[in-house]
Image (cartoon, rainbow, N blue to C red; front, side, top):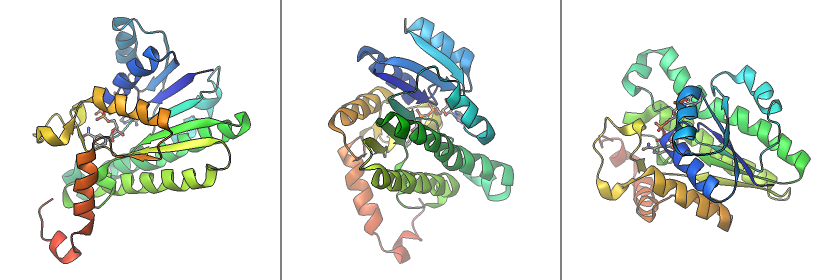
Length: 239
Ligand SMILES: NC(=O)c1ccc[n+]([C@@H]2O[C@H](COP(=O)([O-])OP(=O)(O)OC[C@H]3O[C@@H](n4cnc5c(N)ncnc54)[C@H](OP(=O)(O)O)[C@@H]3O)[C@@H](O)[C@H]2O)c1
């Protein structure tokens, strides 16, 4: 049975993924906070999908959320994310917690529940969308980057732990995506992927059983360079 659970399906990447998986014959379960918007998306695109409410920060609801699924998914994609306000987060514990809980604790919580269900099924695929922001901490995304770094490490650890249990874990490390998350930023076009391109790359990589993808080759190169810049130089750069 090919069925996918898209967590954060109301993200631009999530919506693009929903179309790709539908075209590939998957049964869709779309989960997000904005269920009305998701229902409209489903109707407008003639999709067949179950739409469910899911809040990544409501950790106590995650077990019940997963238990209510009529059929346990063969593929779970974690596509939600919260960039947040980095400056505000410097002084607001609430904003810091929202960034950290959404991108790390929330993602770890729901995926850990999904993994236990997949162990019972004896198979499964977990896809986590992290970010290049997690590859090296920088001043403009201190908290988002820290959370994504944790999430990337979690996915890596999980992949290692589950390698002999027929559960494949894929880490997606995108650079800029032209989504609502960065609509307020002006990013170079050669470094910016469309949500549709990201979705296609994720699906293709799932077919190949890739472990880690950077979505575009240029970002793999950029991050190789960024990671080797000595700290005494890196700290002086306004990034
Ligand atoms: N955009 C980029 O440049 C970029 C770069 C690297 C990585 N990424 C990552 O790629 C993934 C997809 O991002 P995107 O750019 O497509 O995002 P997006 O269009 O900005 O949407 C983000 C989605 O996250 C959901 N979300 C936020 N907080 C949530 C919560 N507490 N519970 C459930 N859902 C929550 C929101 O759902 P509701 O609408 O239902 O509230 C929102 O639709 C994310 O993991 C993001 O961190 C993005």
